[in-house]
Length: 430
Image 1 (spheres, rainbow, N blue to C red):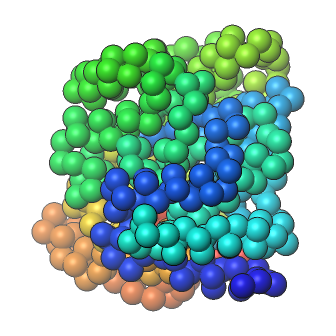
Image 2: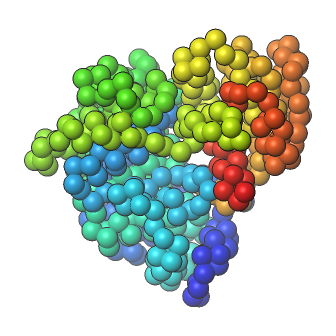
């Protein structure tokens, strides 16, 4: 099979989007499949200096900041993240530049024979997933482009994640804030989830973590001990001596992510023997911009804030920063939540600050899995239970977006990164 256009590439990848949760998250089988795939590709991940990031909140921002900081120091840096907002090519970046559609098609054609061999192998009972294909492509792309470092964000969890295929002891593992999310897959307690995340740490390697709650911290230390690895935990205040008031990313929680990113780069500078240019670090923090995370834009002359908060921990951090940024304000919200998320607790956090709410929905078929929102009518029933009356249900996303723009500013779009991505597509098309 030869793919000639980017549209054909998207159609090919769509054939590998899992149709059920069992094939989306197959556990150990999925990891074995990913390792087999990478072996057939020549194990490019074992020829790269990897910074591997896991956690519940802040993974994407931390990856972006680590990549930006290393780039500012003169290195060639690959960045692989998921999900994407509007285009799959966003997942493949070198020094902040997204792979072109033409080059993406070239690399996909290069690995299609290996995809076919993996799918046909008796070792595996199901096809490679969309996510696993893109992870393999990323490792190969970064190896062939000879990057100095590759920053890799886990997709879900860590232990059985498709990115967890690197055995090198010099892989640096970075753990962001851990909380309750994906409890049907990773476990129903903080301890179970922390274990899944911590299992990205390699034997005799180095890990860095944000200060965790006591239960998560204990589990992480146990994993580190069993793997004869090393770890240090960092607080959120250290950054103040570098990060000025001109910090580009809005949200108090972003300072915590920035602190973790800076600690990772500091460690690499000591290990790999390069000196950090602090002026360039400050420039990165001053100009940092990560789409879809406390992303403030002017649209039709109105202030609109986009944030992909999709669990209570993230929503609490986002709303706390929102209220601090816009004191004495109430907000008009456009909301949609992915099916299975704890929208009840998120609504409790949003409720005191909402002037009005429009509930809508989304359905995506161009990501690692098919993503559907919670039915807005069901969410609306819960709003009634908590005595919030000023809301409308507009299932069609395009219509909901038009209606929210008629409201007074500030306008807030949140509840899911998939919702934010779908709105960005509407803006882009317009």
